[in-house]
Structure formats: C-alpha cells, structure tokens
Length: 145
Image (cartoon, rainbow, N blue to C red; front, top):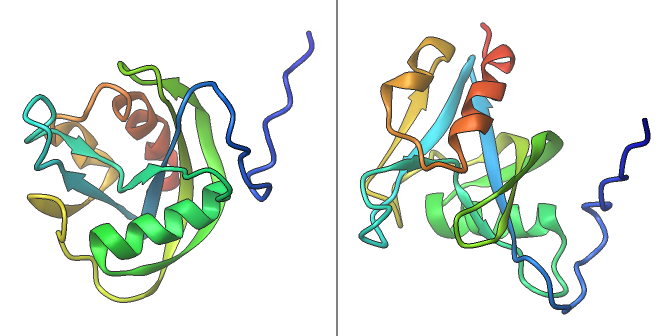
C-alpha cells in the first residue's frame, strides 16, 4: 500500500486551478479546544467550526492560519502538526486542520456569534458544520488534562 505524500504546508500554494484550501486551527488550552459559532452565511449560521479560513495564493497554510486567527479572534497562535485527513467541503474546497497553541491574546468573537472552550466530553454538545464534525471527533484524544 502506498500513500500519497501530503503537500508541505510551509511551501506557498501557487495560483492554480483546483480545490480551494481552507485551514482550521484546533487551538488547545488546558485540555479544551476553541470552537467558534458561525454568524454567516445564513446556511451555516449557528453551526460550529474551528477558526480559520481560505489560504490565499502565495500564502503558506500556517501563515493563513495565523492571519485568520488575528482577524477572527484577535489572537496570535503558533501552528503545530496537521490533525486528521483532508475533508472535502460541500462547496468542493478542502479543509485541513492543524493543532495550535495561543501565543498572545484572549480569543474574542470578532467575526463569529460566540467562541467557546470545549472539553473532550463536550465536543458533541454543539452542532458542528459537516466538514468540521469528523475532525472534532478525531481531536478528542488530544484533549486531556
């Protein structure tokens, strides 16, 4: 069995046709992960996700995550390892989740309705967006302490 190598997240994505890459941050603190409740668009409003967003052409995945967390939460993060497999979203984009740690700031809902820290036994307490749900389940073993 051969595996397809994952693209190096430190290499900027070229401006090419193909699926849009979306990155999410599993920010963990004291055994809990930060979840964010969507405000828009109407079809996603009220559902929960990992903070993050689209990777712009010429931007690395970690750089996109750092930028998105500043914009959405007002915090600086350190991006760690990838978690889980690529998830194809309903719009055809590909979601990639990364472990992350807070470097500076306290998360605020600047673009979301609410942010909340969830323990492993609370991951099922919020309605996740379809692409984020399998990643939330894969995250549980990382939430200890």
